[in-house]
Image (tube, rainbow, N blue to C red; front, side):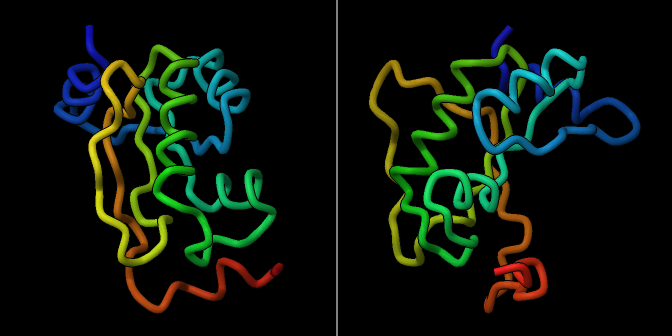
Length: 122
């Protein structure tokens, strides 16, 4: 079954879908191994682990797409990717054919300016 179909079925069930946040392939694999039905690729975690910077728009669309593709290729469960992290003004472009894709994108927390409280440690 395609992961998009699996996610659609999960969302049609009563209750909530628990999709713990991952920031790389290893954490996604651990989430899958523990039996969760989906994984959420966090933009903040991706920014910190790939760039060593807070989630203030430093991550490019290419970097987030690469992270989502790598995670999607690593796990068999649906991947919901943060679609807000990328730099403002970038266009959403189709990924090359054959490149693994996340099952969905999330625009949670998209308010501007970004919530500085979530980055207080920086």
